[in-house]
Image (tube, rainbow, N blue to C red; front, top):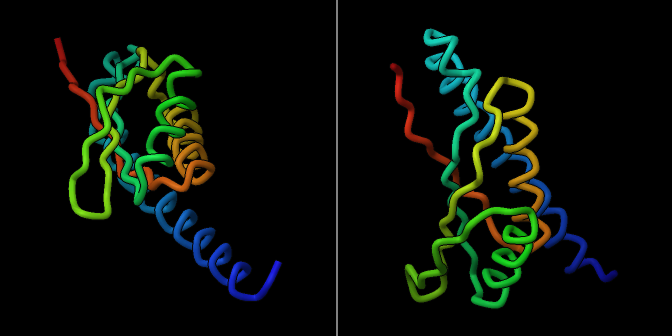
Length: 128
């Protein structure tokens, strides 16, 4: 590996670690808010997810990997000249603290493997 490729890889790893740290901070705030409704935290929820990619090929690869684990990808849209958005949803998953953080880490890793950025997640929380 030449020095240029090494530096690019190093930069990519730093971005992955930074993104993961930010995602975990947001997850903590979400879980703190949801913990006021403890019963709601015990219910598995569908999670929408958001990625972006610089190339259609990488976005297509990510879509295939996500579908292999049972996730539904709504579609891949060209959002800017050099960026594609990938949006989808999981089957219901457990959102208790440790499992949820593991899921966020896994989503970042799947993105990294496909040279895509995990841009976040969302869910509809209903309290009965």
